[in-house]
Length: 181
Ligand SMILES: [Mg+2]
Image (tube, rainbow, N blue to C red; front, side):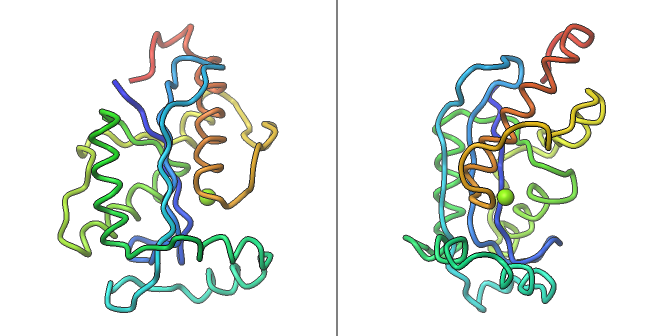
């Protein structure tokens, strides 16, 4: 059972918004303190022909972020269709089964909408999505109490930190539930 934490930097907050970058990491939610596994990262080049939207409020939010944070998305940026293909290959290579994201209504459904825009297949099955926020609530864990390592709003650093938070939150409730699947 291989778990992956997915994080997207995006041009919006709703399914149908464009993506700026895709970050993902293999981790074991049942082993607090265990280092993470293979990682995935792509910067995505925006093209109007992809049919995904840039939301006004998110564009405004990005404008307020540092030039450094903005510039990071230009490095080796590739078309979304190629990023989706690369991610599907990586997903198979690492033998991934479950996908986690921070918020049941965000990265996973937004990624699914982006994949569907190209008529491609979502790599995970419909019952394989896991949400960090529900776990954090059940474990009475505040992710803000966890010291962040790396660059915030870098999709890979966000994914790695979210994975560590899941490991820590899960460790609090594992004695009661046995294992996270
Ligand atoms: Mg992020």
